[in-house]
Image (cartoon, rainbow, N blue to C red; front, side):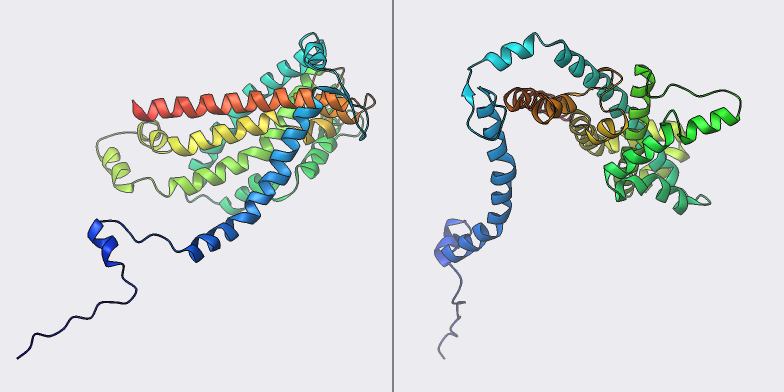
Length: 313
């Protein structure tokens, strides 16, 4: 009796299996992969790389129209170093970032822990907190203007009815910054809450129950279990909020327009005013924008490096 023959699948690469490697992808598969990635690469090139290179070129020019500019070398950068308004805008951006990032992340976590429990009216409260994310930032900024307008604002109307008197929300620089920070927090806390709510579903319930059995209170469980468990989520939210704070524009432009004076002028609004305002100095506006890009990139890289050090320790 002859031994039975074993059929090999026609599409199996035996030589690759013998060498311990997977078969090489076919040429058709590579072309398909490139075709699927091509639209995203095209968008990145058109809307990110091309504007970035164009801004870099304009930063070396005296350019006040869409026509050709005049090359001036490092004159724009030299002016930037001695520009008091630029340094004021940089300081305002730093103050705004320090005020909004920790509060956005911390309040988002606190609300997520609260909304993760069975509370009455939880759905309505989630909707109120999340509502600013569903609408554009411009609409939220207009709501802020309606609330804090010194003449017809709702807040001053309530204070006037209570006998406290109107507050100079827009003519006092510090109060103007407070209103911008408050409305920014309203637009960001809901996003942090939503991300943390999703991350809380992955927290090991058995570990939480064991800690509770061992006598750990709610605050101790949050501090020693929940917060370390959510470290990657916190890192993501910190980086995103840092980038958003450096790029803040709509809220400031609608509510205060950078005023009073330059008390709420940020780097983005200053770059916009120089490039598209009365000065029409595209070259100098591009220089301010490039400095903002470098600062954002540097801060993000530092955050990534710190997070890697924490994970390795």
